[in-house]
Length: 115
Image (cartoon, rainbow, N blue to C red; front, side, top):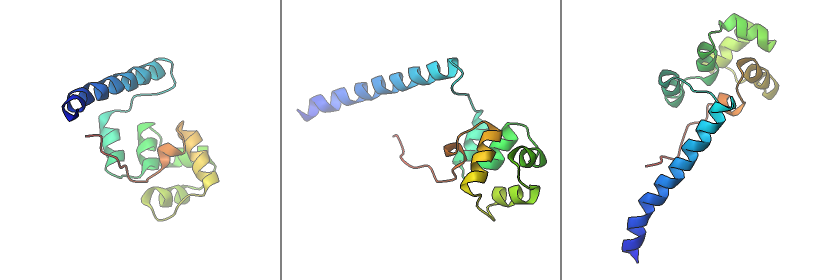
């Protein structure tokens, strides 16, 4: 019985991956999702501050993002450098200005290796 499980499990994983891939392509095609260049994704994975990464990805100067978010430039700088945490309201305004979700701005480490 373990031989059958060993033989079928990789195929089940592949089918699941194909379904996830197809769903992601549909979301992207419908404009519900966007592609992020590998260089930016690697910065996020490496733990760089997501506010700064997304701001730079969007091509905004810190001063522009601060103004769009209704906060002062020094406060944004402190958030980006990790000296201060933004309140939930401030982070929601930053997320809206960047066109991302609050989850996208979470700096929680990524876990759960899919190997």
